[in-house]
Length: 241
Image (tube, rainbow, N blue to C red; front, side):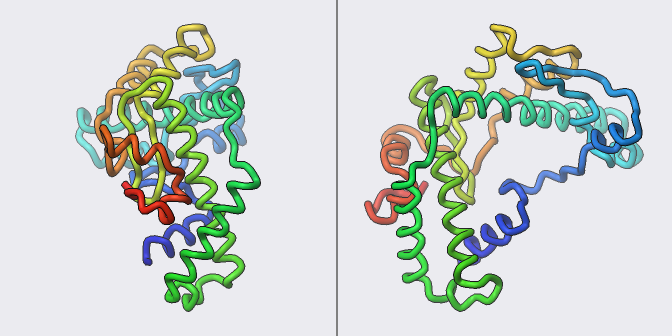
């Protein structure tokens, strides 16, 4: 049950559930406050993205720590990944609105009931003093809601585009090839525009990565996972991953 405890602490602190990748804060906010000139690298639906937003604050420290070639590779990959994440966020938001993807009141109630069953079957969670019982349940319901929304987006993208699906160790769902197909569509019609060739190349290079999750179900296993929402899986006896 330590995994659930970690999830609850993560949610409580407002930190994204993701693997430790050594990210440092970007320099964007610091430069805005200082009035420094920023370098435009892309626009998504007309919203600008600047180089400073995808550059870590410790970039100069890394430059001193790494040999030049290794530093250049690290910075290119870092910026490519961050550019991808920054551009994907508004594209995802538009997709969710367009496809009317949401968590209904009925589903939220079912998630709450699932959490109640989980707590009843795991008394050690209730004995943990990190959170009050009310806050613990609230955080677990919030996590269940986020996981369901993730699952709905993944299922929708997979049904439209196919390709690889990945599941994170803490319940995230990613239809990576589907995401990339959607990004290419928006780029083709001009919703996404790049203004720096090297950053555009790094962005598209990131779409080719092989390791983007912890598990990669395929075939009948994937079909079964996408047939049953996460909060129902404990009842139905369906596979978890």
